[in-house]
Length: 432
Ligand code: GDP
Image (cartoon, rainbow, N blue to C red; front, side, top):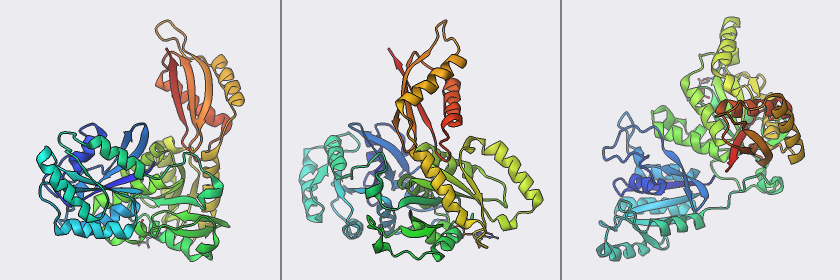
C-alpha cells in the first residue's frame, strides 16, 4: 500500500485532518507536545483505494524532552513516504517553519498535496488562495474540523499516489525488497554491515534500480536484494535517544515497503512483547517473513534449551516462518539468510489453480465438515485464490463460518501447499 505522510508545523491541525480522513476518532488529537502515542500510521481508504496515512502530529518531542527540529521530522517522514500531505494553517498564513518544510519537500521531489486548513467559512478562502505562492501547486481549502473540502483533497491525494501493483512483476520490479527489522540492540546494524561488507554489486548494473537514497543494494549468497531503509538502521543515534515515534514509524514503513522481512531477535535474551508486536505487524501487513536469531555466539546450551521453550510458547503463531541462527558478529550462518529469504518469497508468491484448490476444499469438507450452526450445515460452495503476495483465498459459502474452522482451513492449506514463510489469508464470503 502506498504511504502518505502528513506533515506540517505543530497546531495546523494534522491529527484532526487524519481523523477526518479516517472517518473515525482514532488518532489522538493532542495539544500537549510530548505525550507518547502508540500509533503513528493508520490504514486509510478513499473510493476503494487503500493507503497508509502516517501522522507526524505526535512527534513534537520525545520522552526526554528533546525536540526534533520540524524540518528534520518532516524529512524523516517524507523519506519513507510515497506522497506527502502538507498542512498549513489558512488563518495565520505561512510562517518560517512552513518555509523550512517547503524546502525539504522541494528537495525530496515527492508528490505533494497542499492542504490549507481551518477554512471554516468563506472568509478564509482568500487566505487559502495566497498559499499558491508556496509553489506547491493548488492549495486545497479544507476544514478538518467540519469536513469541508476534504473530498476534493482526497481525490487530489489519490491522483498523486503511484499505482501500487498488488502482485510482483519480476521484470519491472528490480531486486527483491527486503527489510531488516527488530527492536533496538538486537543487531540490525551489525547484520546490515556484515551483509554490506560482502557486497560487490555495482548498483547501476542492475536493471530497474533507481535506488531510493535510504536503501542499499546488497548481494547475499549470490542473490541481489534491495535492503529497505538502511539509512534508518544506520542513523541509530536518534533511536537510541528514545525517539519512539521515529523507531516505530521506521519499522512500520519499512515493513510496508518490503516484500520480505528479516525479523532479528536477540537469541541470548528472552523473547519480549516488543518482538511479538513487530512480528504481528509483519503478518498483518501480509509480508513474507524470515526470523533470524542473532547473537548465537552468546548462547550456551542452557539458553538454547530455554529459547526452544520460548519458541514453543510464544512464537507458535509464526511457526510458518523459516528461521536462521546467526551471529552478525562472527558472520556465522549469515550467508544462509539468502536461502531463507528465497524460501519465504517463494511461499509468498505461490499460486494454486482453482481446480486444485477446489479439489482440496472438497476433500477437506468431506472429511471434516463445518459443525452445524443453528441446525444448518455451512458449506463451501466454491473457492478461488484471490491474490498472491501473500496467498489470499476467497471462499464462497452458504452461511457464516466459525473462526476456528477458518483457522483450521488455513492450517490444512499450509499442510497441503506449503506457503513456508508467508502469511496465508482466508476470506469467507457468505452467499445471501
Ligand atoms: P541494532 O540496534 O539492532 O542495530 O543493534 P546493533 O547492531 O547496534 O547491535 C547492538 C549491540 O549488539 C552492539 O554492541 C553489537 O556489537 C552487538 N551485537 C550485534 N550482533 C551480535 C552478535 O551476533 N553477537 C554478539 N556477541 N554481539 C552482537
